[in-house]
Image (cartoon, rainbow, N blue to C red; front, side, top):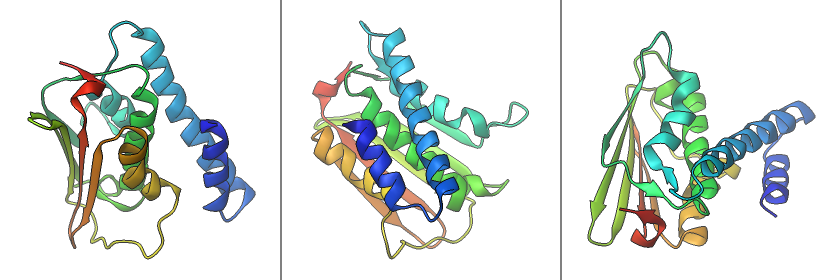
Length: 178
C-alpha cells in the first residue's frame, strides 16, 4: 500500500515519464534505506540522527557538511522508521531543489530534543535563496505536513519565512526508546 501510494503521488506531481521515474526511484530508495536501517536494528530500533545523516550523506562534499545535528540521539521504533525516513527524505529533497542545500553557503540545523509531550525535531534552513510557500502542495510537501500527524499521531508545522524554512515535528514518546 505504501509503494502504491508513493507511485500514485509521484505520478500526480510529475510532468513527464522521466520526472515520474526519477521521483519514484528517489522515494523508493529512501524507503529502502530506512528499511535497511530498520532491518539492521530490528531489536534496537533506528537512531533518528542516523536517519538524517543517511539522507544528508550525498550532499556532504570533501568532508564538509552543510548541516548540523544537535540534541539527544533518540532511537525510533523500527516499525515507524520508514514513515519518518520518507519525511526526512522529502525535507532533504526540497532543500536541495529550493532551499539551503541549493547553494554553497546554505546550512540546515537539525535539533532533536526531549519535551514533556514528546520528542521535538526542528529543521531550520539558512543561507539559501529567498523562499515562499508554494501555491500548490505536491507529494513531498503534503507528506512532510501530513505523515507525522496521520501516520504517527504526532504534530508537524511548516513555517515559510522570506529567508528560511522552519519545520517542527513532535513525535509521541511511545515511538522512541529513551
